[in-house]
Image (cartoon, rainbow, N blue to C red; front, side, top):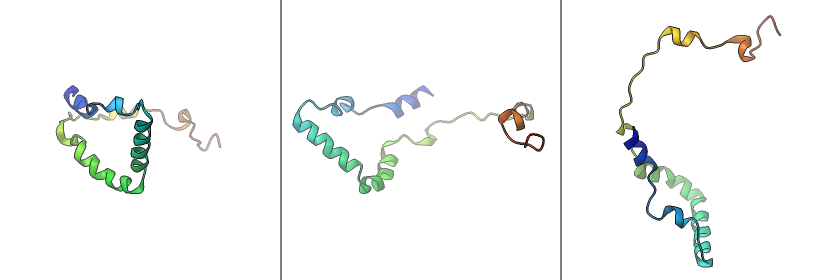
Length: 89
C-alpha cells in the first residue's frame, strides 16, 4: 500500500515555498490566487481538477475480510453506550 500512499501524498515541485512569499509582489499574487480559489467558479471546477489530479481509487486492490458473527456480538449496546431503555427512563 505504500506506493499508493506515496503517489497520493506527493507534492508538486515548489509547493511548500509557493505558500510562503518573501516579497510584497509575491504576497499580492498569493492573495489573488487564494481569492480565485475561494470563488464559486473554482468550487464548481474543483470536481474536474480532483478527477484529473487525484490517483484513481481503483489503483489498489484491497483484501476482502470476512466478518464473523462472533466479531460483531462483542460490541456494547444499550445502557453501556448511554442509550435509554425502559428500566432507566
